[in-house]
Length: 146
Image (cartoon, helix red, strand yellow):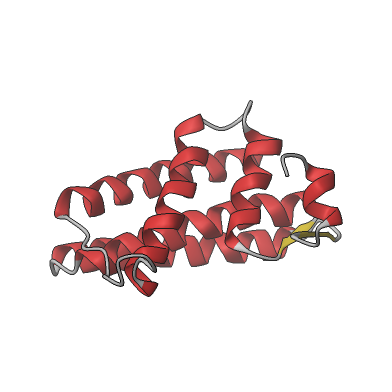
């Protein structure tokens, strides 16, 4: 599955009307989650910091979906959509790292099914995730202003 038509036919994305009010609300949600990530980092709660950074990035991606007139049916579909539609527009690190953080988030929240152990997040990972989320948020804000 590697193109927009596949995502639509499998029901992972649904076509809708472009919705800038929803996009702007997702920007606010992203900003809130970035703030949470920073506060959790300062409190040395690195797992929560990373999860909030990922959530910020996820909502940034949703901004683009809403702007383009789509709704997602899962986190993985959002990553695939960005790769399909924005790989020539956004810095590749945002698209790639969104998917990496998605998998880390899953292991932190649910544990690794093979090892049945929750993944520990290090301070450097949480810090990097915050910086990545900040950059992605700024890039998305620029895109929706065009």
